[in-house]
Amino acid sequence: MPLVLSDLFAWLEDTSLAAFIRQSMWLYPILEIIHIVGITVLVGAALMFDLSLLGSAKQVRLSGLAQHLLPWSQRGLVLILPSGILLFITNSKALGVDPTFWLKMILLLIAAINVLVFHRLIFRKGNFSNPDIDLVPVSAKISAVISIAIWLGIIACGRLLAY
Image 1 (cartoon, rainbow, N blue to C red):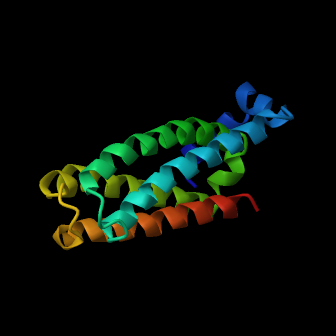
Image 2 (spheres, rainbow, N blue to C red):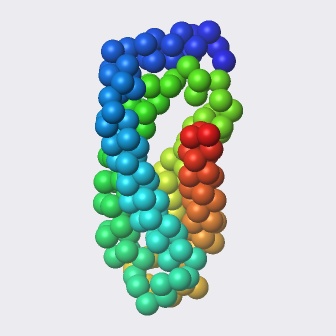
């Protein structure tokens, strides 16, 4: 790990906020619960939409489903980001040298790129108001498969970091 990152992670872990979280009997477990609930909401909504793109909800208009599920994914993200950052700072020195942590960060970056490409290019240009799965572009189905695989990898990395 580059020295700059090592110094940053050491500083983060030594902050009074990180120490307070570590020393609190309830705060760390509460942050973990918030993080897991956020993951459940975000990934649950994403998984339902991805599976629909792959044909699991043939009677539902994908555009309507997107309007319903996207806000739930965003709510999950609002829970995940601050709780994840706070959990990270409590043990940033050890996590900074853990390859599983960096794999998780890379997978998160790929997930973000996949979402951006899907919403800016694929979904915007496609006809998703018709529930006919045969009309779903192959690029949307590929994006859905990538999304499912990436989120499973992110969840696995997160669990492996706990051990």
